[in-house]
Length: 192
Image (tube, rainbow, N blue to C red; front, side):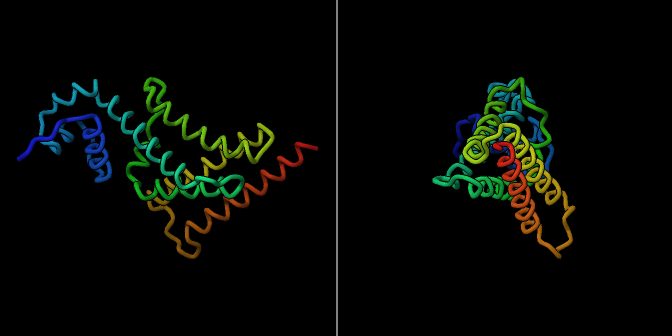
């Protein structure tokens, strides 16, 4: 069998496969899957936490790139809605990885993960700045969208939305549109 060169990317992608299969992520499980000794992983990652936040950074950077590609040329409310839908869609396609990322505490000690979150947040803020003039309204819109998106990811991913009377996508769309309309009114009133 031909040996492959071990890289951080191979370790991260193997780790994601383990996460997506809902298996316990340890250096031992990663090493077995790759076919190496677990000690080899310490050359690339000091400990499992460093690896976990490298996975978080990789996941968020990948999501940001996909969303940027999807939103190319869009602006205004349409872009904000599409940002929300696309983020939700990507996260639901990778439910276990999304939950892994969401359950990770804020990565202050891991600059790559922290930077990835900032880049995704900045992408949303640019969309909000082009639509909402009032800074307080932008903050509330950002928080509301995150609550709605993360709420749907968690609720669908853990099986809470089982009533098909109204499909989750339909209620999500309505919540986004209604909330954005309310925030637009607030933004208009703040100008007067």
